[in-house]
Image 1 (cartoon, rainbow, N blue to C red):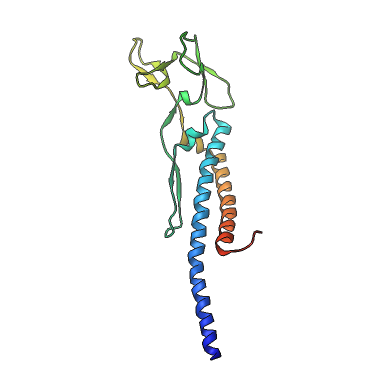
Image 2 (image 1 turned 180 degrees about the vertical axis):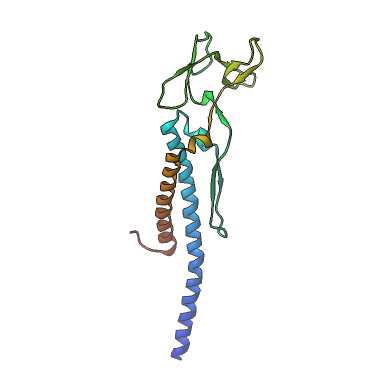
Length: 188
């Protein structure tokens, strides 16, 4: 009789251990997805330290591939072409009735506004406002001027190293939190 009670206890313990694997995988997945969200936010913040661009312009260019319980991996990529110069700092900031003599723009925080020869602000029929320059001496064609692309901005070795450090720290903190939450452990 005692042997059967011990066998039942072992079976229950084995069933709980089998469930542990599932809980640990879910905790890891939750921590991974939260880390990915943090990386997206941090990339916008870090880009703003060097470039004069809205964080939204950077985070909109992020492609997320969320992790799944089977693969336990996720992917974060920056996509997109060059950002219109209007998304950086320009002077004047919008189309005015009186055209300025010189249009000035700044892309990086280190330098101030610099004049751009032959550039002007215009509102297109679609409502898009941009910085343009004539391609020829005639009135048309005109071409819009652009700044750097988000992948180029974030490919700076300092930024990459910072994002890797933040990812490691965040993953460690979130995994501990999720394991405590799912396995019923106390806070440490």
